[in-house]
Image (cartoon, rainbow, N blue to C red; front, side, top):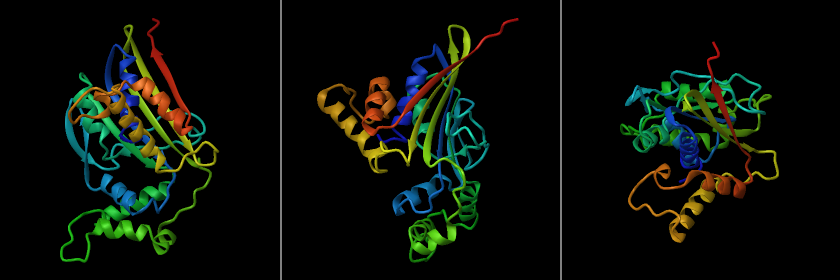
Length: 263
């Protein structure tokens, strides 16, 4: 129960609950390219693009290539100035959401670094075998070595790319397609973490604040489900999202797009 996965799961459920019928969910994450996210997160990100990743497509779980099937989305300002393409990303939302939100035919998680050169760094590391876990007699496995190298001054100098005019912040875009009152409808929930705004919280708080809020929910009884479940199965999404984003000082947006045939 962090921001992603965690709040992204709840945003998806919130959007689904606003529809009469939901068919498709896309969880879309965009981040400026930072070489050193810390060794642990570096390794996590390399893992998310290692070979094939799990997505829910055509009503079933499938293995597809990481970075595959890049798609564009209409993001809100200031993320609307570039035509970003988001490829498949190995993350938990596409695994858990179909288990708890029935009737879906597709759930995908997608990602891009805003700088295309950053995507190529990760793709080159995969091509060179640096995202795997087979030590093969080495002192450590390749993914761990790459993550540690990215955390070093030498790695940051070798792999760093110019940030250009891309926004200095993260975007989380959740898009759900379905039907409302007989009309084809898309519900979008989008959150922005801007690094240059005073309300920006430290990176670790993006995970710890939602986790702490869930613990409080267990303690005060507002989360009553027992067992091992994902957030979308046990948390009322709207009040939790509003409180968590307010605590983090992060703007949260939503929009509804209706498509009606006139003739």
